[in-house]
Image (cartoon, rainbow, N blue to C red; front, side):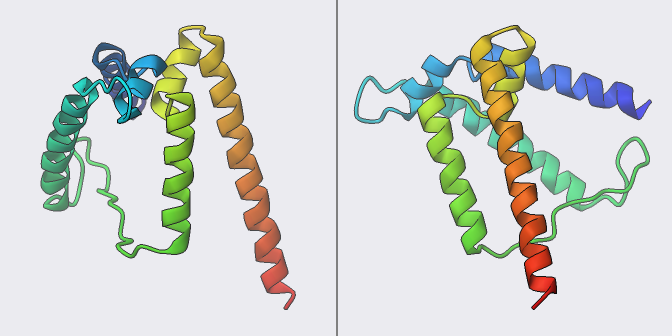
Length: 144
């Protein structure tokens, strides 16, 4: 049953990305191009998403279990550190250059667009490199 609801949530999210234009790299780059022909339409998408997300998060904070009876697991970290800032900056630069972020990349790849498949492949490679570096750093710290 959980897998069915996860699939439906992903399907609704993917459809939302398509309908809102977030899966169109040209539209995203037009939104991020403040010095050129700026397209503000995605700002409305973001405001709507933030409003829905804030309401859902406020409701989730008051619950101990989800509607499916699973434990409610919310993020506990609240501090801003160098890794968060650098990771956010790297994400923003990649989003600005490609006009794609992870969710829309999966939609594009699933629809058969080579650009989405290439982005997903690069994303997976980046995650693998990060994990390798984390393991290497963990071993280096353990041997000191």
